[in-house]
Length: 162
Image (cartoon, rainbow, N blue to C red; front, side):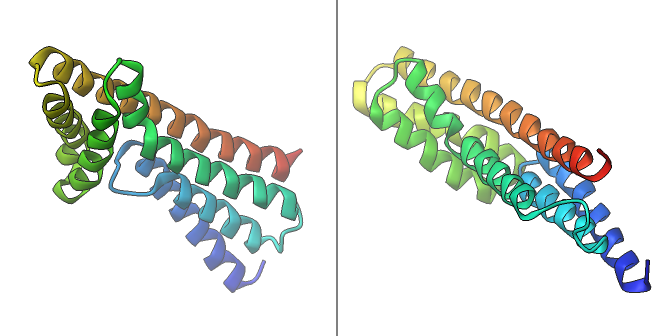
């Protein structure tokens, strides 16, 4: 392995570690970083163990993980019987929450769903249920994101060593 390959491999490892942190911290795009890190690690080995199909699968899983994480709060709101407005509110609250850091990411969807449902139904109880539904959705989305992130690592290990 030449020096450039070693540098690329180290960069790949750093990206995977940052991606693992990003699976927990919503500030970092965990699945995308893991995917990029695994591709860099394979690039360091001249793609001798992983073909284009595996790369496409890794990219698809990263996109799926981000998509699930992004729409999870709206899905949770819907499953808790809230109106369509509460789903939109959870989505908007999640986007606005991104600008307020880690606290905003968790509180934003709740507040958005709560306010939208309160406007739609003019009652506190369904609005509160909508907010709780957004949190349940966020939790399920986070679990799916972590599972898909580790699945990507597992696919790489299988492709690399077996």
